[in-house]
Image (cartoon, rainbow, N blue to C red):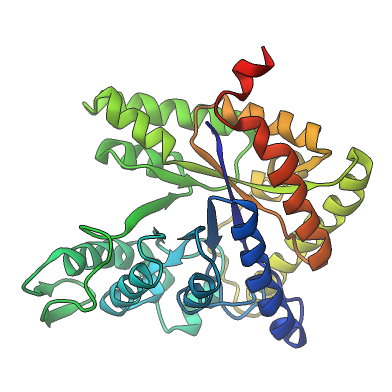
Amino acid sequence: MLRFSNFLFPEATTPEDDARIIAESLEEAKLCDELGVEVLWLAEHHFDGNCAYVDPTTFAAAVLAATKRIKLGFAVAQVSLHHPVRLAEQMALLDNLGKGRLIVGLGRGTAYNVYEYQGFGIDWQEAQGRYEEAEEIMLRAWTSETGLTHKGKFWDLHMPRLRPICYTKPHPTVLRASSSEEGALHLARRGLPFMMNVQSLEATRTRLARYRAELAASGHDEAVIARCMAESWVWRNVVVAETDAEAERVAIPAFEAMQAHRREMREKVYAEQGIRMVKETVPPARVQVEHALIYGSPATVAARMAEIDRTGVGGVICAFRLGPMPDAVARESIRLFMTRVAPEFQPGRAAAAE
């Protein structure tokens, strides 16, 4: 059964929009809780308005207090920007506040926005190493009953037992992001599920097939393979309206404006400093309408989701509010999706239709 979630990734085009967008984002979280969305994912981006609430750990506390049943995930916490002990403490607290509703999505940090590293005084070329060391520290901090001693490249630590202890045992659910096929295969070898960034449908099919094959080749049994596939997620931008024409009218301008806003600060930094983290010779799937955006009537969107379902992945991370899209439009899109698209994927629906 394909599962659905909402990536709450709200853009504030100007600083004057910040307060309004943050308030609207909290209301969107409440709506998702009421409509039965399984997971609400939070992003982390700094300085550019691409993610209005900026700090997902702080915002997560407000969301958990305002909701009752929805799970809360990070897609992702930019681990390389954080002290791992502080981040482990914050996640343990959130795990207690949500009574086990937390999914700790971990990633190295942005692969595109050098200014996010510069703003925190971190060399972006150290991001992967910092992430790997920090993840190890966090897992040990959550599970050690006697504290830990760690001497690594980036941190030298000697600490008592972490408090508060985790609500979930042995620690909150952890999910790693992978933006490359090699990263996905590395997680397959470890028997771990993953979050995939926006890819074309064909690339999604291919990567998931190779991921599944690598799980088997690494000696994992069918139960582990099934669990890893069921707990893995892919990301798409989604707009639902009553008709295909109305969805197209709303979705494409919002998507294109969002991509332009996300490029703006990168291009400014490149013009001023000559630094570009990733040199892309062709437009990647994440910026192409045909690959990154699913839009249309409920029937059209359901058909597109069925294509993803056939890849065998467990769930779709749907970003509904795109760029400058008005709050009311995004909320209606979520309602239509949860009342007229998601029910098509409930257990037994296909058998009943036959």
